[in-house]
Figure 1 (spheres, one colour):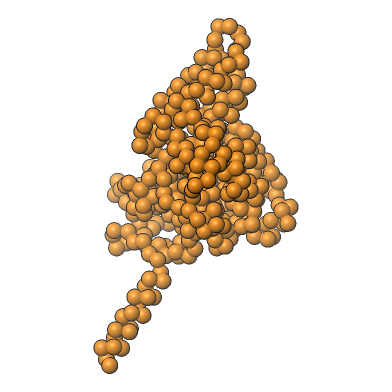
Figure 2 (spheres, one colour):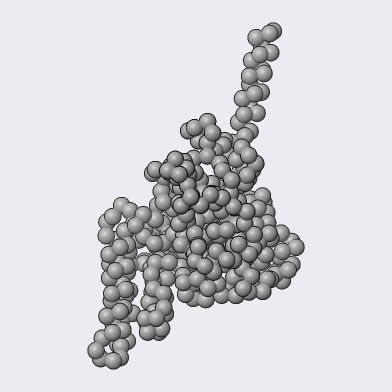
Amino acid sequence: MKRSYLGSVLIILLMLTNLTYSEEADSSDGFIFTTIYEVETTPVKNQARSGTCWAFAAMSFFETELLREKNQIFDLSEMFFVHHMYQEKAQNYMRMHGLANFGAGNVFGDVLRGIRYYGLMPEEAYSGRATGDTLHNHNEMDAVLISSLDAIINNSNRKISTVWPELITSILDLYLGKIPEKFEYDGNKYSPKTFVAWLDPKPNNYIQLTSYIHHPFYRSFSLEIPDNWAQSQYQNIPLDEFMTVIDHALAKGYSVAWDGDVSEKSFSMKEGVAILPEKEWHLRTKAEKDSICKRPEPEIVVDQNSRQKDFDTYVYKDDHLMHLVGLAEDQNGVRYYKTKNSWGIKDSKYNGFIYMSESFVKSRTVSIMVAKKALPGGIAEKLGLD
């Protein structure tokens, strides 16, 4: 009888332990994360040597939306949008006589527009690796594209031909592969537009949000970042409401597409943590530098004004897009956002995910994209969405 009682106690203790999901650092004083909310998502991918994080973050977001809505895993093609967006950006670059941004970067609004105009494709129908590489490598392609455009603009004829778009399309076709007009998926034939009609993601159901005081709140504006070359619109809300949207979405089972800055030395995929330490890097001892992101430490208190100042003084910029899929707390009660990256799982503590602290997210987030249904009622009403 006594043995049975002890066995029951052990079973109960094990069950209680499993209710708390922890990912503990190697050292005893490292991070211990306890999940509050987590949204089921698809496997981590690897953008490799390409500047296409926006496409990977967006496809991860929409794959997760489809998983939530249809309870089915889809692997969507990132390079389908990359091919189309390079052509659009080339047109813009030429019309601006080379005085515009041309490169790999884009924003989530470009994907929403791309879904609306071009459709969607599964990865199996279009991988974008026509060169035979197992991983994406766009270094040569990027160099050829910009060199070709500049050569056309600067040619000695003092005018340009009407055939140059065919050259850009041909370059993209050579490096990424020609986009098929028709493909087969799960025994059925589709075009990109009929495939998106079947999946029915409805771009109008999603909204881009940001939080800056150089524009009025509860109005939209074109965010002044280089990758927003197409003048995509963002709704502007106060920082506290901005963070409320993220928390509310995750609590309701919706994920959040994230655009921000990861250039800080306190952003570490190796340790799986991103924080905003009080102690500045140049004031830290070697031991303190070596221990960055290995254990909790005091962080900067971020408010609307400090966030604005850091944005205006180039302390941070939009240099990477990822996907928020969960909310957790460390052993001190500090909140962290579990974030799905697109750098693969190698040399990554949490298999391609990173925990970004609340202070880091408050300060280093440029914008987010979220389902309109995920907005709290009061905020949706202020934005005129009710």
